[in-house]
Length: 237
Image 1 (cartoon, rainbow, N blue to C red):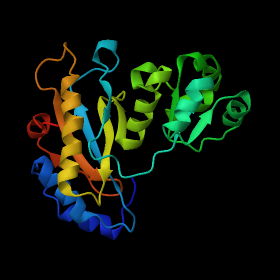
Image 2: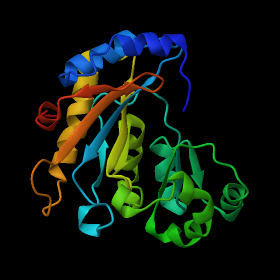
Image 3: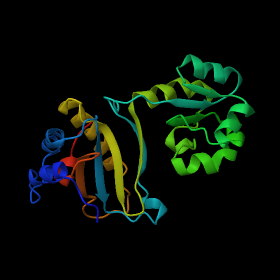
């Protein structure tokens, strides 16, 4: 078991482990208990009443947080010709429009956070599966990162504005960032509301009874704070 330092232990003592906090109270407390010298990411962890082994119970979506994530997002676009120029004009940080660039990625260059591709480029991008796949960077239509050329500007804008892709893991949990600890609490509440509303919207039809079993708020280095699942489920983005 990992051993925590004194600052972490002191933070834990200020949390009532028997209490279910409102979303706002939990976010505010996470901010008050932050003890690091860097701007931590605020994370939401939600346990769902689903069985991810079944395809009809896979909960996933792509959302755009109204107040962003508070970090610079580097976007790479796989495109050629007019689509490549459209990507440059729309603010892409990198445009992979030839084999030389694709070979560079195959060799291990990964100085980007999100990869977007047009359908004609997927034949070449597919060869990068072993590099991009394990890092969650492989473009695909479900994630909104494989788009037609005329949709490139929107995809880039959303990626830089605070685009978050979440997916339930094999233990039926969702983990997603909603901003930085330095954000105004109201902005964190707004971002969390959009995430929770999306999770509720994607409730599998086969799920019976309570859907969201547990919600925890935490800073990236801080202890978890239990949120009332009913209040979290009824947040409106």
